[in-house]
Amino acid sequence: DPEPFFEKCVFDACGCDRGGDCECFCTAVAAYARECNEKGVAIRWRQNGRCAMQCESGKEYKACGTSCPKTCYNLYASDQCTTTCVEGCHCPNGTVQHNGKCITPVQCPC
Image (cartoon, rainbow, N blue to C red; front, side, top):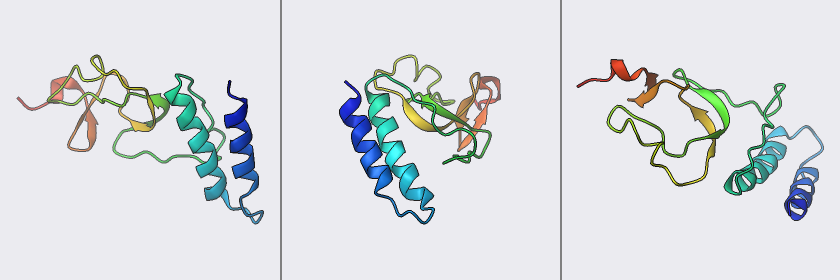
């Protein structure tokens, strides 16, 4: 039942300073979204510029990305992952992490 979580989220968000304290609001909603992710429900709430997450190094924002990203040294990591998804900056599909950047598997060093 999501109702108690939603009520707590609204309470926390409404408790933020009314002077445009976006960080407080974003933190409250992020906590709610994280709980939803842990229950297998992805919420895409960082849209239209509100609480946007800036991703670098070729990564892109995903509301529900793997918590076990593929790397050059473990190309099958996410296939074997049993934990829930996490919100954040992730390498695009078809790429892997290597030294903090996203590259195609064929670019991986031997």
